Length: 122
Image (cartoon, rainbow, N blue to C red):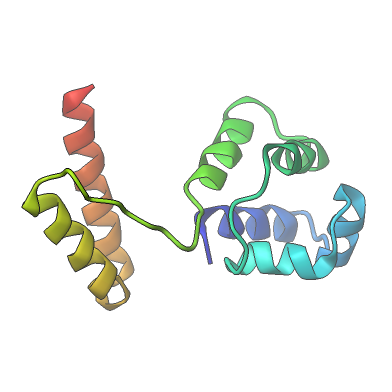
């Protein structure tokens, strides 16, 4: 499941909505919506994100969060480290080969650490 799929499912469940009803309302198939929730489809288009925001009638911060989560929800990531340092290539490969071995707490800790490192450069 992707971050966007997790949030989408939570919003739908909070409101007691079926995938079929939501899919019909936003103009997609229930199969596509299921695949989106389970991370078997890539990030949705901006147009679909806007339809979902409108469907749930979310505003401001919640709408921005949905858009941000969609951007961070590509289930198949490709990292090109050509031209970068050996340390960058090693990190990319280490993650690619071992990410499934990390538990949720470890993933959150690593993500937070990277965000802190990136924040220092802004």
